[in-house]
Length: 296
Image (cartoon, rainbow, N blue to C red; front, side, top):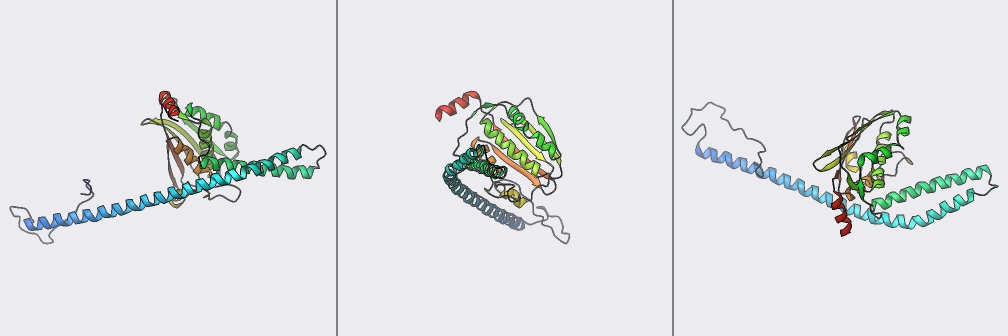
């Protein structure tokens, strides 16, 4: 028994058959010895569990410390880059309006604009990751947010040979959340799923309600991930994608948004078997939402 829970059994037998005694096949002293061995084994298991739990908590503390440091660094970098990047974008767009601009120069400036917009998008993600942009929470219906987000993604799914399946429960209640940040969560998860199915596949989006939580599941049958990769996906700047195809900030931003909403995210995946993201948001009533804003 370990912490009051039955964890296993020890079989002790005589190799040779012994006559049955009044107190059973074992003498009283032998039974005490067997009980003592069982207690020692329980202690060994308990110490092993304590050591594993200590290791797990230590790793969590280290990860939290790393994330806090990266968050502070990201906020500083984003702030310093935002102004010069805005100037580059502004002057490039101004130069594009010149009436006698040669075609080649116009195309070159267009590349500057595109690169600047991409950089600004990365800065937005950095600010979200560092939680420097607080969510503007209101009562929203998750199914509505999903439909609005998929409106921009359906054509991309069709282009990549991905069949999009909706299983949206009409019975889910409203949740207190920032609609734009929920859209970013869904867009990042869906885009990741599409990229995980380079030869096409099936993407299923499901909503339901369970234990005072609204549940969102985004599931694909793509290339999947190994256990090692799963452990790294929420680490900032970690990516398995090619250069210029990913920043390594999408899933950390998703994790940050979900956490800031009091939710959780769980990942299941295996190579060549697809990936399943399960997101759970707590159901908060309108009155509770008002109390939260009053406290803020």
